[in-house]
Length: 237
Image 1 (spheres, helix red, strand yellow):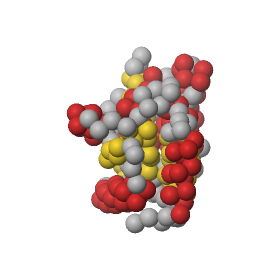
Image 2 (spheres, helix red, strand yellow; image 1 turned 45 degrees about the vertical axis):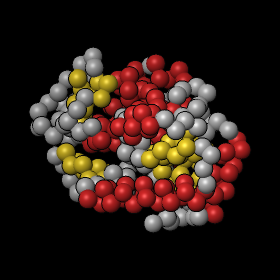
Image 3 (cartoon, helix red, strand yellow; image 1 turned 30 degrees about the horizontal axis):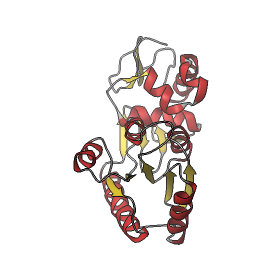
Image 4 (spheres, one colour; image 1 turned 90 degrees about the horizontal axis):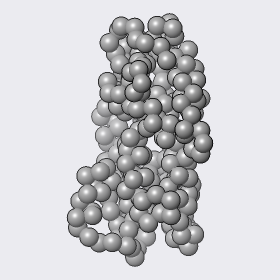
């Protein structure tokens, strides 16, 4: 299943562990990107759209379980958790929170690669079964990361696609301002809702027939946004 195009994101604060993992994955045909903390890892995941995430629980800025929760708010990328703890209750909790697998340190690279291949097989099988979210004339292909409007491909910036991807993963449901800010931006930008409003306006310019009367990207005033296929105007924000 492993192909050179498969990109793995390593989120671990120990340089030696990252070097060990990078060497093992690259030898087996993966491309690799790294992050030393949760904030960096979420940022890399946003801009690079990895096919697999290896997530250490003991991160310096945020516990890995919280990083997993934030990632799962907008992405179904396979996540394998690394931990020095072998507690069964902890494993169950993380698997219920969205982890695809749990590996206890120390571990062998052969075991991790086998688990990675299994996670990728499950992911790609699921993606091919139902990879497209269709909302009226809009189609978001989560597998190929492409967007079409009235059967014609449209080009989005990375942030525009990330916003649309998050909403497509929760189609019909409201995603809060706070969650979108946390998952798309970093640093002080996370606290400025104006960045989100500007991004929403730009995306509406590309996907709405009339951006001033949106029918796809709907505002829930004071709460957030949702992607909806009900063809009725909403409040503009």
